[in-house]
Length: 306
Image (cartoon, rainbow, N blue to C red; front, side, top):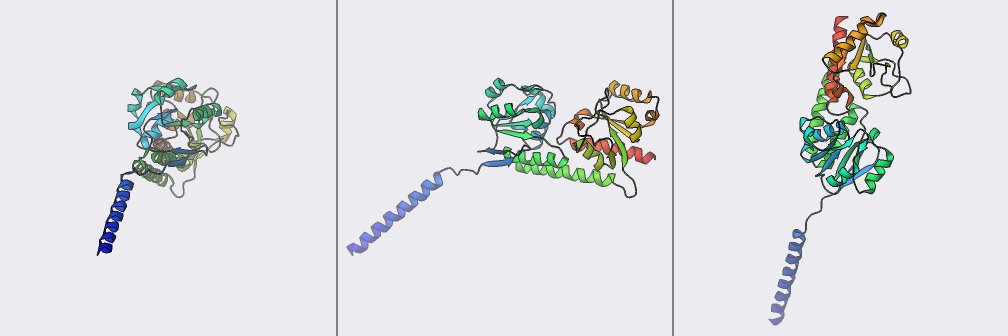
């Protein structure tokens, strides 16, 4: 009888110990898995928790962060950042010459989104030495833009928002491309004029050239190894463009640009011209899809008149 009671006592004590262990285990905070993505420089970016204080060092980066759902945690931007409109009120922590290190240290960001071409290796190393997590953004295609939004959503803990935005943008891209490619219509020869004096364009597989191709055009004089090749009037005349696109603001600047081409004494004076919103076409971000819509509309207008 005593043995039976002793056994019950031991069993009861063991049960209490197990219950106590389970209660302690449940009371311990569950550590979330780290957030890990790879940026456009091929570097792995790791955060222990979703970013709560984000700084962007280029205008397009601010637009990408906002598209990924990060506007509420964006605390500082770069000079020239003006979209979405809410970012105009944020502190400027970087200029066209680079980030203000003192201002960055004071801001205490847990994530910096930088433009690859605008961030030197030396500055990147200094930021890393200071313990700052840097996501390098260098979208070269529309696909890269969508990937940037998705990866930033992962770092921000806003994956659902980012995924919905990516899906909506992809749907719009597919729609524009489908409408632009009509069977039986040859690609329209298009020259993208970047600079006016001297005349320059964008070489290689630049995003702008991708937009032209997706919209049913064929970008001209893009085979130069230079990123921004200079183009002579003779070379442009021989290329026989049927449309010239140029990023220029509406108003007097655009009228002056058109007038300069119309005053040309050669055959280029009769080429169709279309000005593009400079911000849309120059920033590789979510509004690149709006730039695509402008390019497609300009090409479709010329094709319809033929």
